[in-house]
Image 1: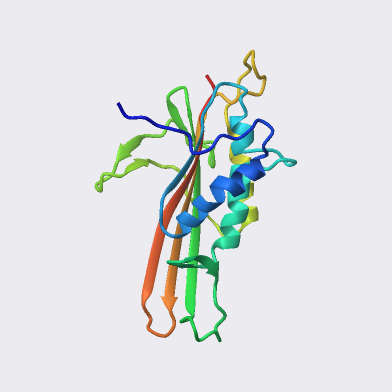
Image 2: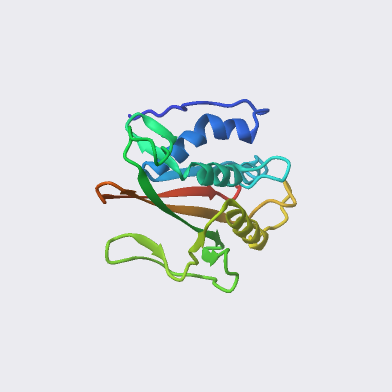
Length: 212
């Protein structure tokens, strides 16, 4: 029988910021290398899932901290040894790279078995299907290109305001829908000496499950 174990268990008083820098920040760097990442909050109602993922102005959640880290790190250079700042054009030890980046986000909820677009409240009950490549897609889901942290966070806040909430005995503000906040990252590096292009694409999925 296969056994599983926890990599780490945090004490109740640990801050979201500490969790981010301990475990999530390395995943953001993995995404910059081209790996897909999923961060999932699971637990019973009122256990702090939405607080951890979305957070507050006083205690930013993982989506906010991810945005800050991602836009700061987009210009970092990925090497086999790790991630470092991009070299200056006059640094002849490393061939200078012209970098082009694109960050695209989507935000959906699953509520009463209906898939709804949180970046466009008019798009409800969307169809989930496979495309010709066998990828699972949501037909009509808004995918918005954001160019800075401010645009990113504005979209997140607008989407969260639309999210369905219902009163429960445990928590009057308990979220009653599952949400998936997806960040698609594309990085194109062009070696200015050889013209060679290197393209990396990845997804960062932040999932907030409804409480039980």
